[in-house]
Every structure is written in C-alpha cells, then in structure tokens.
Length: 295
Ligand code: ASP
Image 1 (cartoon, protein in one colour):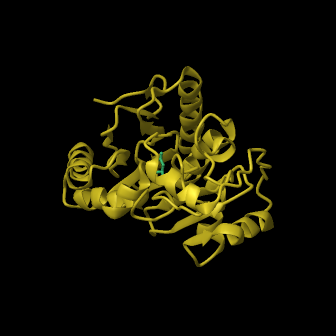
Image 2 (cartoon, protein in one colour):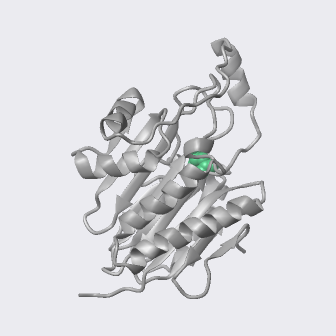
C-alpha cells in the first residue's frame, strides 16, 4: 500500500482583519487534533471534519456558534466536505440551529445519495441524526424588505472568519471542507460559495484538495476550487495554480479570496489576495505553524 506522510492545513478566513491571539491558538489546537487522527491512520475526511468541528465549536470564527447573521437576524450557515478517492461530496446550505454544519455535510455524503440539502430540510436531516443543537439568541430584525435590499447593496464592510481545512492521509487520499456563516449584510436566504462543490471546496486524488474563503459571489462566478484543481492536474505546483487562479479572480472581476491548496504528493500552498489570511498547517514535525499573512 502506498504510504503518504500525513499533513493537514486549516484556515480561519481571509480579509482585512488580522487574526487574534485566541483565534491563532484555536487554529493550532484544531490543526493538532486533525493531525492526530491522521497520525493514527484515520481518514483525511475524518481529520477535516474534526478540525472544522473544533473551529465551529469555539465561537471565535464566523461558523457554527460564531456564525454571522443575515439581515433578518437569523444565523443561516453553509458547509461542504469532499474526499478525493471516490469524489464523494456532501453539503448543507442555509441550515439553522446546529453547532456543526460540517458534520451535517459529512452525513449527507455518507448517509444519502445526494450532495446538497438546504434550509429547513437540512435542519430536519441533522435533527434526525441528533447533531448538537444551537439556540441562536441574536436580535430578530424586522426591517422592511426594501430596507434590507438597500442595506445589502450599500455594504462595503467585510466580515471574515469562515473556517476550512484540507488533509492528506496515509493512504494518499485527500479531503477538503469548509463551514461558514456567510458575509456581512446578506439578504435572508443568500448562499455563498462554501456549500457549492467546485466553488468553495474540491478534492480529487488525481489533482488535489482546495478550501476557499473570501467573498463567495466572486468565487462562485469563477468556480475557483475546481479551477485550481484543474491546474494541479495539468502539472502546475500548488503555489503556481493558486497564484494564477487568484490573479484571474482579481483581474477579471475584482474578487477577494484566500485558498488552501494541497496536492496528493504533499506539496501545498496558502495564498490570499486579501490583506490577511488566518491559516496554518502541520505535518507532525515540531509544532503547528499558524500565521495571519502568507507572502
Ligand atoms: N466564502 C464565504 C461566503 O461567501 C465567506 C468567507 O469565506 O468569509 O459565504
């Protein structure tokens, strides 16, 4: 059997804000937890779910307990997970009332023949599997709809902290995942790139694994995760593939994003076209590395 050296990367969002010390510690702990699954021979899929689950649980990021609110005050979350051996994928969009959308996504992958469940039906599915509930106590806003429409178009503030991970396990399989509460000032029902396979997340043992963060509308329009994987499949390195696609995102549509890119031979790149990106990685040597910027 082919034996790869395990490796995991995780991110806590890309944007205009520097990572906080608490977020940095949490990322390092989540990376270490995911790595220990890989070191014991666990799957890349399990490591990605576990790492993202700890970040969702922390309340420090825009995912799970800390998810952003839409303009009506509700937390509606998106998540996806994919593995590269059989190209299996699962995702949930606009899900409410649970701590771990990433686990709901994995259950869609494992327990159904579908790829994406949305809204109240995704919530019903996760309650069926007894995923931990989260009672959101935020403001319920009763803005008239035209006020929400003008507020969403005028918004220039960026809120970050989407979480994601990519991993390579001992068997040589890669996996990718991401979980988010979306962006600032979203209309109710807005869905970003995160739960859309090929946009926010992609994994294929014949190319690599990618987890995106940034303004989802641009990432969707250029199908960024799959575009990066296509370049890996053509023989480009993770650094070159990420650079070319992120450059295109900026030059064609003035998009804003950061990417974790991992190839099945263990080469990787963390790249962003935002001022900051909170991310880190570990291959079991020394301590996990976490930084707020990647040149
Ligand atoms: N990509 C996420 C979205 O658009 C947000 C982010 O990554 O910060 O929903």
